[in-house]
Length: 93
Image (cartoon, rainbow, N blue to C red; front, side, top):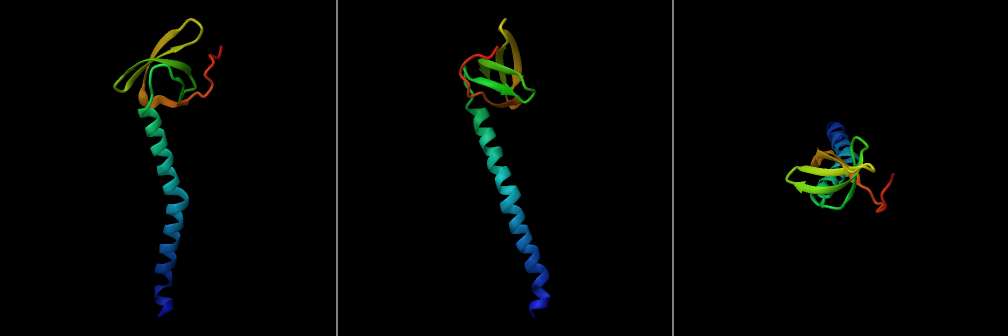
């Protein structure tokens, strides 16, 4: 009896391990990134996924306007292009 159900039980165990080690943590990271992008506001120092450092000057739906560089060049980027919020509040030049 145990021999017939053994492959099914092992498959279920592997699927459970796969879920808890890979899928669930990825879903948590995705949720945190989505929350971070939804909470962006004017004045936040950000880094884009392309590596551009800037300060948000305008937020409109899914488009952000950021200032970059010493000459305060303004760029428009998509909200999804924000990699993270730069924790250093000082301007980097």
